[in-house]
Image (cartoon, rainbow, N blue to C red):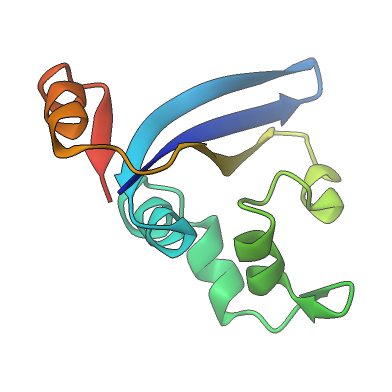
Length: 113
């Protein structure tokens, strides 16, 4: 199991903000992606999965998966009248022990994907 940090970036006409949304325990990037898509209330990725749009020479959904989030999608930052929120994740630590996972869960610092 690995520890991942999920970052949230919100941009609007009068400024932007980046914050840590949560920490996730998961086996890999795929589980983090699926957790965020299904459990975070962030529906943008479900819409993109049904889309055939591409980013460069790969499907947008594959680009999001490979780049660990969608913050690098320039086309999502164009219409910011109401603001736009995006997520990305990064690996913080590999091979978390069961004891460490137990402590993090008891302190309510992490969720398990």
